Every structure is written in C-alpha cells, then in structure tokens.
Image (cartoon, rainbow, N blue to C red):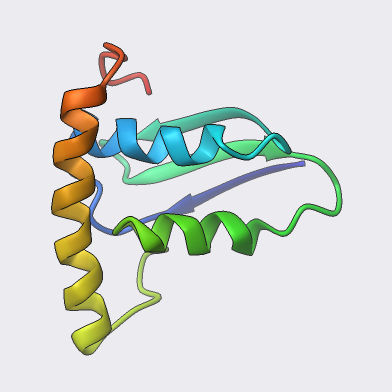
Length: 99
C-alpha cells in the first residue's frame, strides 16, 4: 500500500534528511521519499501497518501532518523542527534534494 501526505515545517534538505532517518527506522516501510518543494512525505507500507505511528514520530521531531496542530502545541513543535533541521544538515548523506 502507498501513502503520501503533507507535513508542516519542511524547509530544506536538512529537514528532509531528519525525516528520512525517521521513515527508515520503520522496517514496515519501503521507498520512503521526501519532497521539499511540495512539503510531502511518501512511502509504501505493509498491510496492517498503522500510519499514525509515522505521523506521531514525525510530529515528535517537529514535522506534524499539515494542519493537525494549532496554538501553543504548534509553536512548540515548530521550534523542534529547527533543531531537527540543524541535525539533518550535519548528518546528511548528500541526498541532493531527491530525498
């Protein structure tokens, strides 16, 4: 099965690198992709896998599903994305935007 969804705070390849690291931590996922220009993540997954697990993990590093948060919660998660972005920039394995 395949899915694609928009996420907030995706700004650069550093962000994409951090997001890919999360996606690759799930053995049930195949072909993870991050599109910085469109602000989306996409992947294939095994039947029965709960996509909400991925969404929760991405929110935990500052990249929630688009429109899913508001108020103070959104502000806190936005701050997390800056940290994840910086970490992604330093740990990037030269993915050149086609992440």
